[in-house]
Amino acid sequence: MVRVVLLTLLFLITLKSCHGKCSNVSSSFNTNFRTLLDLLTKNAPLRNGFYETSVGNMSDQVYGVVQCKANISSSNCANCLKSYTETFDGCPEGRSMATISTFCTLKFSDEYFFGVWDNFSSASFGHNGLDNPLAFSKGYLMMQDLASTVPDQPLMYQATDINLGEDGKRYGLAQCSRNLSKLNCQNCLEDRLENYRSYVENRTGWEILGISCSMWYSNVSDAYSPGETALTPSEGHVPSGIPTVTSGGHKSHGRSGIWSSISIGTSIFTALLAIHVFEMLSYQVSCQILSTSTNRL
Image 1 (cartoon, rainbow, N blue to C red):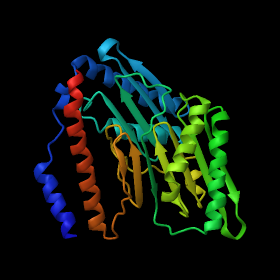
Image 2 (image 1 turned 90 degrees about the vertical axis):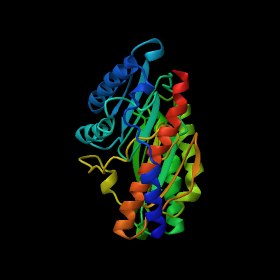
Image 3 (image 1 turned 30 degrees about the horizontal axis):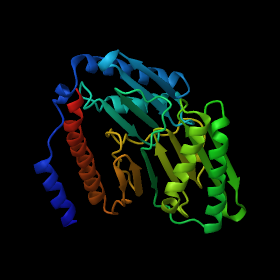
């Protein structure tokens, strides 16, 4: 507890705000970015939760893509995306950024990336205890089957379940960004399962999130059935490759390497404080990264 408090004080002293960083991008890029964000958030809920487009030209052109979890309602998709847009204070903090959460993902960049497999991903699980190893093995096989069949689905997503008798049912959902080729979609899903298997091993519920593909697994059906799925607060926005932090266990990998799993303590105060500390850490790292990214401008 003392360590958490000391860390908090340290970050409060050293943290430098990114507010006022509009000078990192040109006014034209900022205008294009705001237009892009508006187009993405308005169109995705109307197009089955996926939309990509670009705005501007030459050095100030910005590309963007958003995708919502396949089984949530259009209104919840809109709410999730809106939570992202509200985190920007008038201008982007850089020329490239990716953000992921349980219910929606967003990426923008001044470089063309449509159809390119993005390696940025994150995995987490809750505190619902361990599963029967045999049940997990069968459930994991179900998810492997999804990885091979999702690419052939019209909207590149599929939900399924398996009845394990006394162990109950296991439910799965997988989806890919619809701008990927079938081969890249399958490779992305299989890569996620391979990289995170030891991390989610024997867990009754877990999720693997990414810009290019995502997977959800649980022994509870409510969170995986279509409808008005309740949204959790947005995990915020982070530069590409910087993982977000969630409750329960968490692990991420991408261009910035691998973070070890993170477990939030049982104390409510400690949990809230720890989350706040990591949010500030991500924000500080983004400031540092942005200071180097402007060299290209």
